Length: 448
Image (cartoon, rainbow, N blue to C red; front, side, top):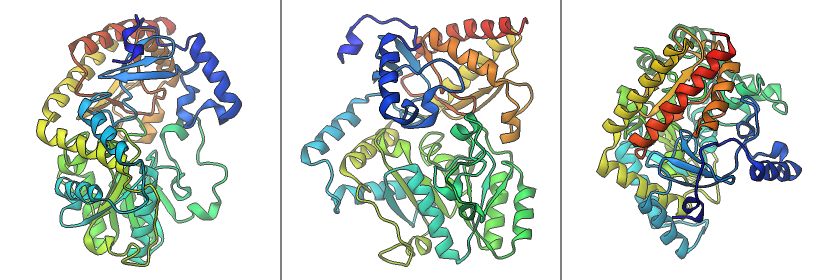
């Protein structure tokens, strides 16, 4: 146990004096004091608590608070923080060398495991990279190179990393900050990016009809995770599969968030729809910076050195990330935590909805596997437009009240929450007690 965990703890997770001092120091040398925009807490108010350590379902702040964590490093902590076998695997790998920029045996073993587990990779090939952004931009370049076409389709509110061509109606951090695209992205970079509403198959058909023979690929989160958590409606993914097959376009599932989280083989296994290519990240590195993209052999053989599509990276397949990933995958295969995770998450979401209703607070809840989101609005949330109809002021107040009561949620209405195998009865109980008070505060703010 770390010194942080041995000290006495409190549950008020709001930034205390130590975190405020650290944030002030960070702002002097890091833009906005953060290395990823949503961490700034701009949309929820207050200043971010700085994290010192984590264990199981808890994170510990520099101010001495113990918080139940539903961010989980934005998804990878499916096994909870600090799982011993994963940590030990990284330490063993580190002793042999941190990075070589050369071939290692473990990379092949890791690739073989991924190709066994993920439907889109079976019989195909996979290339390791260092992040989800690298995976998606590389997959799209490859799809363009493979088809000889230049246009791509993405969903409004779908976030696939910060490559220029993808920063159009990008959801999540961009939505939180109210930025429709991004400065610094030339119009020419996005002229071939077509956007359609999520869950709207007819809009995709219209795009194909308006651009005959020009669309290289559709990239989609099979469960949208950057406009909250929005599952596909019945027939949507199947319809995309049929369209891409008919039109000769590449269907890419961005499973950076859903891969290994909603099922061992990801959303594609869960929904029984196999894309041509898949992008992976987060969980496959067990918390280390790892990503991957792969798919059908004839597509992947277009990548250098086999083909004309170039992509490279010194840290791709780095030994620490591969070690963490292999250890994580082995545990997931052996323990099959998915039925229990589903049960815990469903019960949590139901109990949160009951507490919202008790206090007269409108809450629309979505949940798939160990991903969930509560939108502060009535009615169903099926796309980005629905998600944007949420009461973000109420979410901000709820977030602050939950933090004060020891529960750490993503600092944005437009992000999914994540449950780990370590979220036990005590952690859930604390969460629900906090939610009771937080919903009461939201109701009081509206005079309900």
